[in-house]
Every structure is written in C-alpha cells, then in structure tokens.
Image 1 (tube, one colour):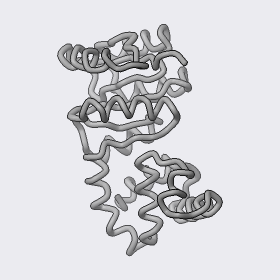
Image 2 (image 1 turned 60 degrees about the vertical axis):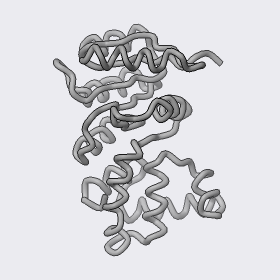
Image 3 (image 1 turned 45 degrees about the vertical axis):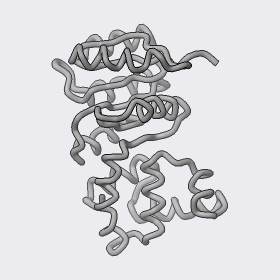
Image 4 (image 1 turned 180 degrees about the vertical axis):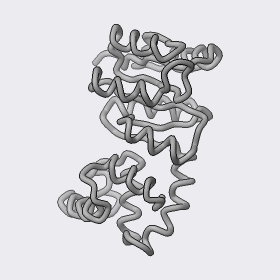
Length: 207
C-alpha cells in the first residue's frame, strides 16, 4: 500500500512548518501540501486529492467548518481531522455536523496525531483524549436521566472511535448484542448514526 497523503491547512506558518516537520519522519505518511487559508485549502484539496486533511477551525477567509462541509460534498473519500486550540462543546458539535472524522487539540502529542491520521484513514473516528475527559465528566448525569450506565459506557467507546467488534471485546458481548444495544441508544436519542448520537448528546447537554 502507498503512503497516506496528508494536506495541512493552517493560517500560521509556524504551525504549518511544525506539522510538516513532525510528520515527515513517519513511515507511511506523506505531506503533499500545506495551505494557508480556506481558498487555497479547497484548491489544493481538489488538485492533490489527499487521503487526510489536518484542518484548523479558524481560517482568515473561510472557516474550517465551512471548508469541511464543502469537502464532504466534493471529496467524500478524504478524511478530515480538525486540529484546533478550541475545546468548547459548541465547536465540537459543529465539527460533528460538518462530517469531520476526528477532533484533536493542537497540544496533541506527536504519537497521538500520527495514530489519529492512521485511524481515520482506516475509517475510524477519533476525539482528543483531553476533550473526551471533559465530555466524560458530563456523561455522569446522563445515566440518571435517560441512558443506563452501560449505555453511557458504550457511547464513550463510540466517541473514541471504537468499532462494534472492539466494543464487543471490551464489554464481553457478541457483536449481535452490541448492535442491539447501540440501536437502543439510537432509539432513545432519536438518531440513526454514531456521529449523530454523539452530536445529539452534546446538543441536549447530556455530555
């Protein structure tokens, strides 16, 4: 298999150079470009068709979330990792609605970022551990009001990007049982997909 092609999109030159330097030494990852604003991000993405885009939320001309919306339509196979300093619930919720595949904070460790790139390239979802810790603290109220403690734990694993197989292994269930449990969560939250379940929980202040 070829290298994972990565496009960096950030308006700060120091951040762009730092990310390029950080990723250049990792086997199987190739930085194919670095964009400084929204328009150049869209132009370079369409020309280079990267596998993964590291996307800042705050860009000088077009917001990262608007860029994500556009790219989900024009390049549906490209995976988007939001890389930001903002750990606010509202940004996280908006990013989920935009269809991003991962939400990481810029203070993420080298290995955390590299692992996230490889995971989203394989179709998994990733959320920054720091942000997840904040969300998990808010999960405590959910079990008492709507979801059971077990369902809260499953949602935590879903938010981490765990597959049904991984959830089954962690919970010592069959995959059929996991599908049934997840469907029960969907029914309670009135959603049909994993990303919608997490987004709904954030929107309704469950997390």
